[in-house]
Amino acid sequence: MRIALLTYSTRPRGGVVHTLALAEALADLGQEAEVWALGRGGDRRFYRGVRVPVHIIDCPDVPFETVGERVLRSIDLLREAFTPSAYDVVHAQDCITANAAGPCVRTVHHLDHFTTPQLAACHERALVEPFAHVCVSSAVAAELREGWGISASVIPNGVDAARFSAADGSAWRSRFGTYVLTVGGIEPRKGSLDLLGAHALLPEYPLVIAGGETLFDYRGYRAAWESRAAELGVAPVVLGPVPHDDLPGLVAGAAAFAFPSTKEGFGLAAMEALAAGVPLVVRDLAVFREVFTGAALFAGDPASLAAALREAVTVPSPERVAAGRALAARHTWRRAAAAHLEFYGTVCS
Picture 1 (tube, rainbow, N blue to C red):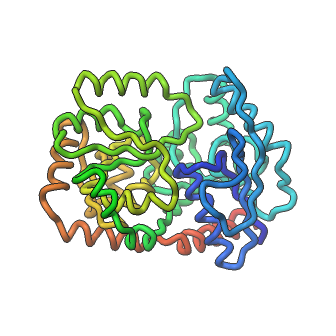
Picture 2 (cartoon, one colour):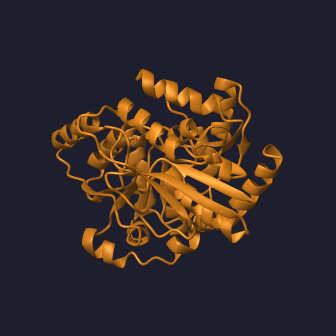
């Protein structure tokens, strides 16, 4: 089966990580999987090596372009370059590629609510025009069904558990001490202001923030975050995107992993932390209850988030850590790929 998987970027973000890992797992099962992506800012390769053929479409930066204009240009560039007739299955992983691909399968990782007309229209088309849908959790599938009347198959993410379980975090602990880590950058959906408030209540543990690659413009939110940090008298360590080979050690070295997102489809970065044996604190959302019950602590506002993080750092729970490692080990990409093959056979026959 010739399968094209399409993603909007070459840089590390949950949907991109998912796309590459799924494509490789499908190839390991004997399928002809290829990846198509937009290369932003001169990118000619993905953030890591990829074991399947890749097609990267040049998407140069345009000065003073709005996010809406960038999205529409991205769709046009990919639509012009992509050759859907070469594949048995076309699988889009986000709203940009779903708009560009024509008839396709769509994975809905999470649902957004845009106010910009261009983005809202793009988001809507990317939900209603694909002929079949996958969600990475039942919580997102329920939201899609209730909001749009669309039924989706649920296929959870995989995780490269061995990569994180074998990581050595000692160098990062030597650098930062007993630190709390979050991965995902500084943006509204990641609950960054709440985490900042929690950090102010337990400043004895450095807060390290990694990641942050995004298509959207969060400069206003980042400025508000920096202003709030100054008011609170705290100075988290903001690393930005971390090289692929360095990430497992950074995760493994943390005393606790904070994931207070207000909206997620699954929580791949949190699952990677569990694979590394790091205590996990997540926001009390339905999707996280579905995925992480028994393996994480749940919190809401900054005060409860701070309390949960303090417990995670100071009160060892071998049972919860063991449950987390076992949970991550069960979520293999091979298992996800096998489920996708069954799905493709059903919807594309």
